[in-house]
Amino acid sequence: MTESCAGGSRLTSLVCNSTLPHRLHGSFWAMVFDNFLRRILMKYLSTRGGGKPESFCDILLGGLAPDGGLYLPMSYPRVTANMLNDWRELSYAELAYEILSLYIVDIPHKDLRAICERTYTADVYKYCRDGYNPEDITPLVTLDSGLHLLELSNGPTLAFKDIALQLLGNLFEYELGRRGEVMNILGATSGDTGSAAEYAMLGKKGIKVFMLSPEGKMSPFQRAQMYSLQDPNIFNLAVHGMFDDAQDIVKAVSDDAEFKAKYKIGAVNSINWARVLAQIVYYFKGYFSATKNNDEVVDFAVPTGNFGNICAGHIARMMGLPIDRLILSTNENDVLDEFVRTGVYRPRKNSETHVTSSPSMDISKASNFERFVHDFIDGDPSVVSELWKILKDKGQFDLSGTTWWACTRIKDFGFVSGVSTHADRLATIRSVWKNYRLMIDTHTADALTVARRLRRPGDNVIVLETAQAMKFEETIREATGSYPASHADFIGIEDLPQRVVIIPASSAEVKSFIADNV
Figure 1: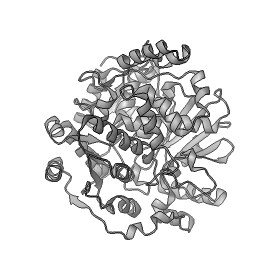
Figure 2: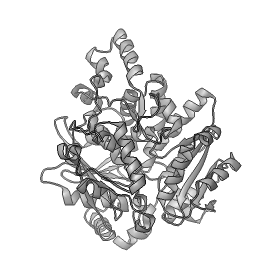
Figure 3: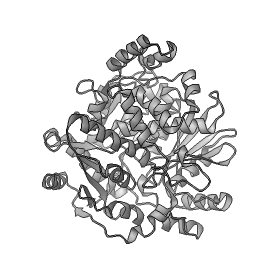
Figure 4: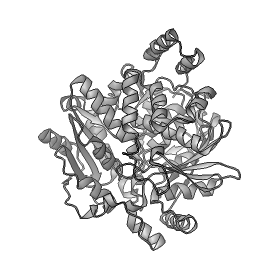
């Protein structure tokens, strides 16, 4: 295994090509030259090195790479001080366009701008707290000086997954329309991805959704949001087992190239690069909301299960956003905390995976973690392939004795971590309600618990709020003795008829179901 002390950087000598229009003041020929360079350089490769460089729209529809790896850009664009200054006062849709256009060069600019403007509107993100402007999309709520919540759950399913999946739905519809193709989406959810994906794909031409979830492991509200949808193109499959079983099925089906091609299988889980890309935007928006100038630095505290949310923060930091630390919070399923502390990545077996009151984090195999490891070991795909082979054979791998760990350690990437338990969640929810008259959900409570524990004097910390409290009524009542506020649109949702198929945790069974229903 070849090792390096390069600090995990993917940034090549040409990584700053995206800043060219700013340096040359946007002249016609500068823009032509910039577009030419970016069309050559902004390609995507598998973390495991297989295949050829791909365009954004090709990996958008493909999801997982053919060799089983995840796609990453050949380089991360670097933002300049001028770019940060220019972006500080932009609307969310405008900011999304600026960031996405650095990575997406095969959709015309006017079309990409229109997609962003259609996605990020007050009509879609209308469920914000009283007194906050839905035009903000992701309002910042300040608890104390230097301690904030970035509210990401104001979309149609009251979860942060809407931010990325609403964009993904519009991108899918646009690209499928250009190609005259159809897609059958296969996804897995531990709680919020499923409903967010299904709501994002409702009414989209040429798209069917097959969503796997662990039977009986989500909250009643989460199940109702998904299973009450009666759209004939939405299929909910409850799998015997845990989320990891469902996620393994998605990967197994995606690994079957013949089946994937025949049945036009696409992905909405965060193995799809577009999901992670969309999430980068709110790190920039949160930074601008919590600071007055670009000389300030912030920490982000992120509740973490599948590593997609915090992976976006890692990439924003690699791009040059002034993030000091990324505070990774797990619940009792502490696989990622163990890695940050020890260098050992040891996914748990089903029998070792806890069913908790923050169910969207009840994950022991973090699929996006491969993207970070690729950066950490200096972007060597042969090493990633070897590590994931070791993981398959031995159930874990250990980087603690390697030169990468000795040279850079995890702290050079800004990561610190901690664990939050059910008792911690209750205490944090209770204290936020008592002191600020705000109700927060269980996952946000995990992040805030760890943020408070690891916060240093003078730190400016932004906690990512990931869902609304009403989705976890039982735990909120346990913590506060009160019912969380309910939006009128969701009253009685748990009483609606539900449509779901119970299915064994078998990729063959899922393939058969898809074949019978496309």
